[in-house]
Length: 110
Length: 113
Image 1 (cartoon, rainbow over the protein chains, first blue to last red):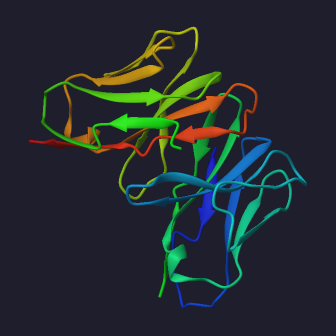
Image 2 (cartoon, rainbow over the protein chains, first blue to last red; image 1 turned 45 degrees about the horizontal axis):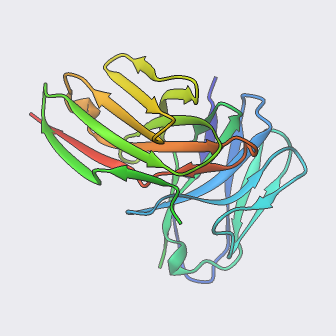
């Protein structure tokens, strides 16, 4: 049981480049989330998906798009990366009582 | 407005000592409160979860307490080990919106030999 799998683990982008962060869970959870974590800021919600086919904005959605491809997969896309998007990104899935987090993607935009 | 405040921001203790981390929240009504451990470079991992009716929950050397009246929780670590060095994050969920979670900014614990 792998839990939540994120790819890639590390990525360096140039300003203006685009990329998609992939996330998949094998726990049959309905809800999935994308967070970013910056030093001293805690985890901030970018987007979430309460169920397959639905997505909603979180606290910091600007500059990002998401796609809930199916129940297992929830991807995060940066259309035109900016240095302010340098961060560690975590995908998570949950049922009502708790989260399971992926191991994170460290993204640097130069 | 940050609805979950953790203290201290960072803490250094010697191996074998005990320590207590604090979490104060204003989320109301809340569904449950979780403590997570996050090792450097890894995703957070759940330690304990408590509903509003629970006062204490243990997981090995980790004991979490909850006072729903004062909206305070603590995480007590007994006989600390070097592997306890990590960030500890308090997370409170909204009773009426199970997709709404409020994260504290964490306490960074450093256990020294």
